Length: 307
Image 1 (spheres, rainbow, N blue to C red):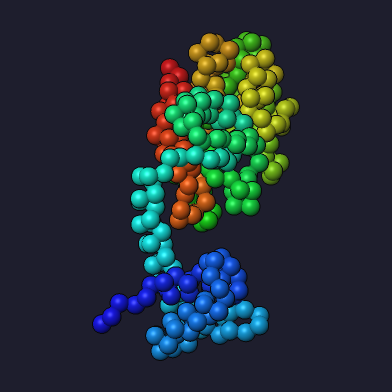
Image 2: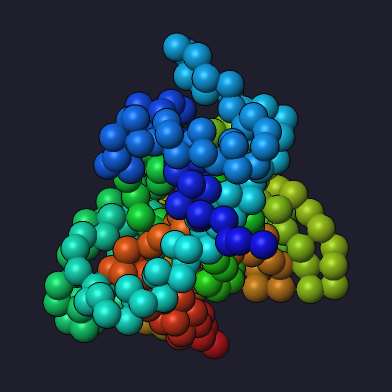
């Protein structure tokens, strides 16, 4: 049995992805007539029609649809094999587009990005700092940091980096003035600060050390998407606030903030590194991903030493 010409399999997969022979030919950098002939050869070799051609483009037959799955697997395997050698011989260079929430940018990334850029002088970073959810593919973002319990977008690869526990904090001056809460219901008599929630419903969902659960609703006197503003406002005694521990570790150690209800716990978020589900990542993107995966847990854990 003679080996098939795998080039025709690749051409078939690329043309179908492009939607037409003309578009596929442009993407492949080949004459349209050559691409058309190659597809005909592939169908003759298989002894069955794989696509219906018309002026409106291509439509896969049922067999063509099943055949395409295996062709795409071959293309993926070939690209993966090529990337093995490219990673060895290519020096990471170029621009990596990164998106991060304000809090992570102003805490973890301020410590991590400068040494990375010293290690990789030919890599440039374009950092977008925003608390809104970014669409990585539409906005051309290579890597994003997110704090979620889970990432459900199937178009993204999500790598958990570290837990991101929340704690309720308050300034000592506020607790001296209003009293130290002994029970979650005491929170209802205290001024509150909060991140913005699109639902418009603000509440602490608390679980005690012994497993008891309680939800306490409140009306914030300050609402913002900027965690740094919330932390500074809390330090000035304007209200209680639930913030990630890594963001308040220094203020806790210096006595500018205190933990409130230490035996009751808020839901724990998970810090994720997310990037588009691409077969071929540029070396500059790959090394930054590897660097963050290696160092974010260490830096965030160091910030969580609160006692």
